Amino acid sequence: MTDDLLARHRAVMPSWVAAYYGDDAIELVSGSGRRVTDSAGRTYLDFFGGVLTTMIGHDIPEVREAVERQLATGIVHSSTLYLIRQQVELAEKIARVSGIPDARVFFANSGTEANEAALLFATNHRRTNQILAVRNSYHGRSFAAMAVTGHRSWSASGLSPLQVSWLPSSDGLRGRMVGLSSAEHIDVFLDDLREVLATTTAGDVAALIAEPIQGVGGFVHGPDGLLGAVKKELDNHGILFIADEVQTGWGRTGAHFWGYQAHDVQPDLITFAKGIGNGFALAGVVGRAELVNAVPGTSFSTFGGNPVATAAGNAVLDYVLDHDLQANARRTGDILLTGLRALESPIVAEVRGRGLMIALEICHPGTTDPDPAATVRVADECRRGGLLIGKGGLYGNVLRMGPPLTLTDGEAREGLAILTAALRTVARV
Ligand code: PLP
Image (cartoon, rainbow, N blue to C red; front, top):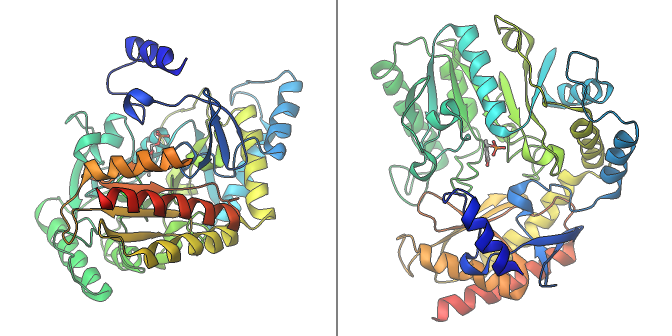
């Protein structure tokens, strides 16, 4: 059954849309909470949530019922030419939790579109197309989003509407940040920023776009306070800060509601997507009114913030806040991080992350040389053991976990045991 679907997938889908597990690709046919079942009847603990997107779990009654209530009205779509109650309510809530005074919210359908919109707001307001971006970042697949993506495998085109200058990656295993203390790391970054501003820009840069924790880049992040120190320098030049919170928002990092809050900084614009719809297509930008309003024309998104997606979004955000899922992410994330750090596997060069955003760097034993083949083997072993996890990183050697924020302590321990067994099996080979 799955084989047949895989053959049909390959016959009709673009070659670069790759499914996990090669010839043994999985079709998920049902889900509940943190568990999913494939077409062969095997059930897995889901530690990737469709790339950190089923943020509160599968088939959550509160979300299903909110969507069903909206469907029952007969209005699936109206466009923003008409008032959408669910959309206004969600915008009010997002403005409130954003930390941005007098914020405006623009809804789109994907993280890419959200970043595209934020770049539009910033470049219009500043009247320049110069942007700062960070190496090893991922911001999406439109021309502008690809242009600020510092990750070769995801940069499918060199065409760009922007002039981009690059700041260093915070990778602590290789490159210029190796072995540095947090304070030294921040100093090196700031020196580089000043040099870049002085040498590769015309000075009047529109914005820096950065992920507080780089998602696709393998959950690489700088020390706490880095983005705050950077923003102080940016403020000297009037340069805006766009925080891409597509993976890090809504309490996932446990310690904070937004990833940027680890940095003592206030972004001018925040982009969000993935988790807020819990699988329904919902994304957007929240930012200072003068920036969001800076679009010198009429603009709208046909589907962005539609009644069904925002019905889901309201239910998801209410659920996150009512159940304090940020605290749950911190507690269950600690179980995972503590257990993984105690493992001392010879093939794990680094355990990193925050809350329920956890990554393992898989390297050849005793080195920091990436081992993407072993990474695939660990992911395959996990799948055999009943656990779905993700991969990523610049060298394809990072195992990524972003379980639903509703993860229980028992499920965290269960996943940890499967992952531990998988790492032991692969390390023995
Ligand atoms: N920004 C970040 C940090 C992401 O991780 C992603 C997707 O993985 C995007 C933007 C693009 O989002 P989308 O795939 O919804 O367009």
